[in-house]
Image (tube, rainbow, N blue to C red; front, side):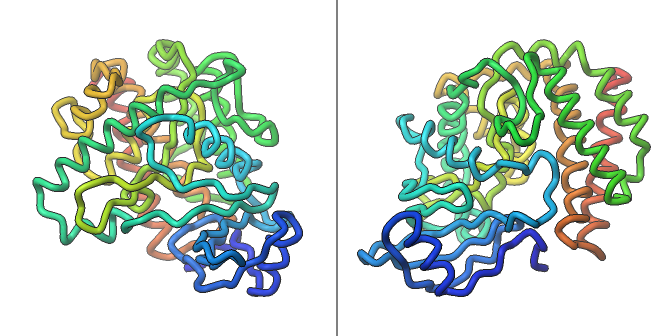
Length: 327
């Protein structure tokens, strides 16, 4: 599948775009097709440096509300996280409103390396990843607001319950627009979020949450001894650091005794795993489920993919129901 949000440019157009903004061009080596929103290309810059060009959707592309302005969000995360010790990232070589140029990370995406890494090495990597995430979570909102930082999205608020409620409501509005097959009524989802307001209100500091740290966005060294970098920060928001466990869960155990949480705590991160946090996690999974189903509309995805996403939303809706009832 190729997402309809991906901008198609010829090699000459890519080089001209870069030259007009940065003063240097490039030679395209390959398109990187793993991403599902932005287009990305492996290039060789005029000075011989390898780089990745990440291109935002064209201005006329239809995107979801939370996706408005997310190129600027990714640039912001790169700039702020670059000042943190122990958070490996690509170097931001150039940034512009519609694209960015990044250095090439050493190693391989974890999802492609996993089959050749023994369990003990995977465990050590999970502990290291936990430490990296704890350091990333030391970044907080500079204006004290929660939610998505891009003003174009209009999805931020002075407290976490209001911001998260707005984020969910925006997805429900998009679901109506795209006739998304949620399998659950918008009214019930609103009720589930409302039932969690008191536990959401326990979040008292807007910390940076990547929210897309599945193994494909985590690079590891070829020998599997180190995490070499995190990528794709555009979906970041300021809110509850516990929400990070949602995408991290695609790579393995995120429970209180897991390697990942052990590393997180070693670096000073705090997660209490009490009933309130477990309730919040259920709501964050529900939110991700909404995204997965609704984004199929503007991206042009259907068939087995949308059914898989809908099944995930169904499971996570059941979890949110159980959490709301104290189960």
